Image (cartoon, rainbow, N blue to C red):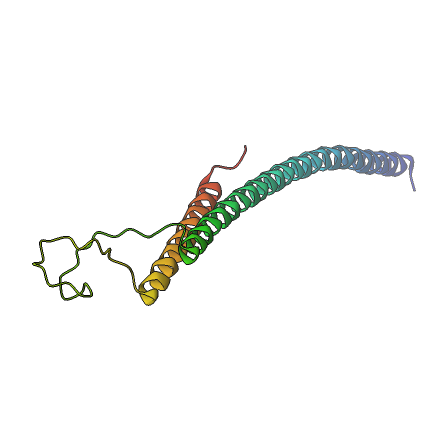
Length: 161
């Protein structure tokens, strides 16, 4: 080969080597840039996940506290109903109702219905059981409704940023 061809070949080879080296250096630089951006995105996602997890845990804890409070309120209402039931059974208290007694209902009464015989109206045993069953149901339904409202409020509360 002649001298000119060798020079051109050497120049071409240097050009190809220089281009390849530049490509490699720029590629490493771009890889580092993209790697840094990917790491930043991963850190942001991890931070967001931690925030969401903490928010979920806080809501779960608040819900547990609310449920415990409602259970205590329900237990208190049931205890009060049981106390009233025992009081009625023992005869130390009475269940008052607005009622009048007609002479036919009052044993031995012969007077007109406007005359007070002194006899009081009393609930039948089945009516008493129904009263306490209703009272228990109202207490339970009220407690369940309050617990559901608390849960909805907690679930609807905006998440922490």
